[in-house]
Length: 183
Image 1 (cartoon, one colour):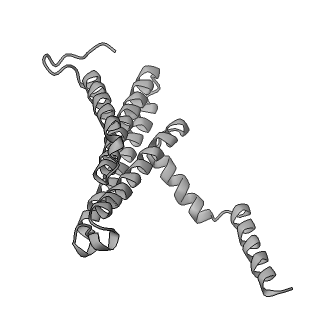
Image 2: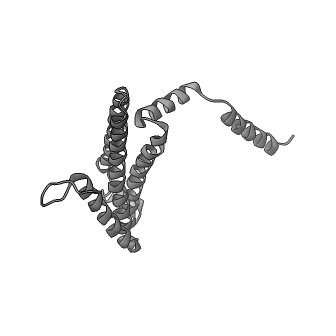
Image 3: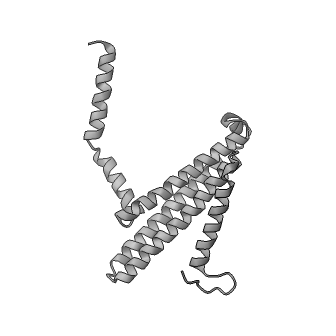
């Protein structure tokens, strides 16, 4: 066998092992993380989508700063992109993780009550909180894209702002009277 065949076989063998075997330590970490951020399987995708959109917000912010300052290297040299600024994005991710974990634990604690309407209302509050955070983040991503020069996203930004305000009014009540609106 020649050298290229050996390399190809070793790569295929490594790929096969990565799909067939599971690292128990990694599986324990991933399953614990999933248990912490989602009180039940149906809410896991919602929680993970929020974390994904936070990472996308972080990435689009870097892209926008680099795009408006002559590239990534130039933005770093001009101190537009700094470690302090990047820490804010990481802090937001940690804060959202904490909100997810605490909300998830609150839902799990209320599941122990055993009263069905309490379970469903607490689960609904978890969903509303995550969706509201998701809207905030998607708005931030669109703003970053607009700041980076993608001006065709402006109508989407206005739509997101309008929907976010509508949801906020339905949840918090009208601004004048403080009364809840009927949905």
